[in-house]
Image 1: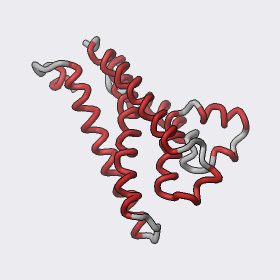
Image 2: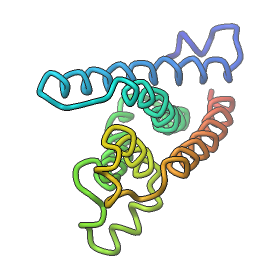
Image 3: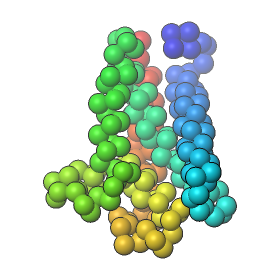
Length: 167
């Protein structure tokens, strides 16, 4: 990272490059998971799979931006992994990725509803599962995508600001 920061390009460009690079890695990993699901017998319509890819990329933009923002405030990157885990794990566990949020206690449902990853997971399930997911759906698909996109814009703005003031 130190070598990148001394490059004669703007911090904004560095931030976007890191964000797109890390998001591409996450998109490839998500695609591999879906392909493994197909190998195990999961039924996915090819059109749903193609629609799923930009939504997966949209989800990763915000989460990668959180990581880059945290990294920009840290003096040393040795403890970055631990701090990043303290952010990502609660977001993941409260997103409904492992179980429907309707089965959670009320106070956890409230926390899940302010979690942007909840809406990303909900959007992916709506795309991949279609009508089978409707009884559990948190929001309509367009609202889910809008919330995730809004979160992305906020996190990219905060991240580029934080990255520009980084020493």
